[in-house]
Image (cartoon, rainbow, N blue to C red; front, side):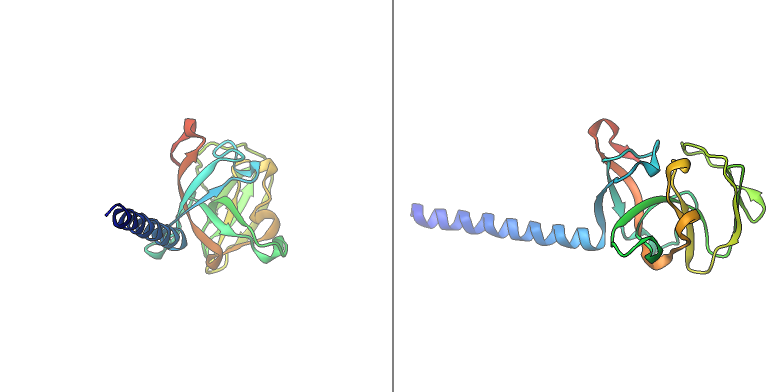
Amino acid sequence: MPRRLLNSWLFDWGETIVVALVLALIIRAFFLQVFWIPSGSMEPTLDISDRIVVNKVVYNFRPPARFEIVVFRAVPAMGAEKKDLIKRLVGLPGETLEVKDGVININGQPAFETHPMNQDYANFGPIEIPADSYFVMGDNRPASADSRYWGFLPRKNVIGKTFLRIWPLTKFGLI
């Protein structure tokens, strides 16, 4: 009887572990994924080594919105290395974007940014953002390699929307 009980216990635990692993893989592949911040380009909003959770489903139901923080696959102009990056989406398809003395102008009107950032006073553009593309910038504008340097972000490269910081625990919360 004890051997039978042990076999039953092992089978139950094994089944639970396999189901949990399969569910975790499905969730990571299609719904949510954890990323870490590799550089200071998003400071002061996100710091190096912060861990964030990205919603990979939301853009199946609606398009990305201005000033959302998105994770995306690096565009070819950035090099052959395949890696994921994070930036703030500032320009939408079909818009004309210009940066004057550090202020983003969309179709000739200033876009009022209320998120924290390290401002620069550079000029850029004007440029028209193509269909199915976005213009992204880091919050640490003086130290961010972004669309000003490597061009537009194709829609197909967008992985998802950042919505939660899980590490460090002292900064746990919605973004």
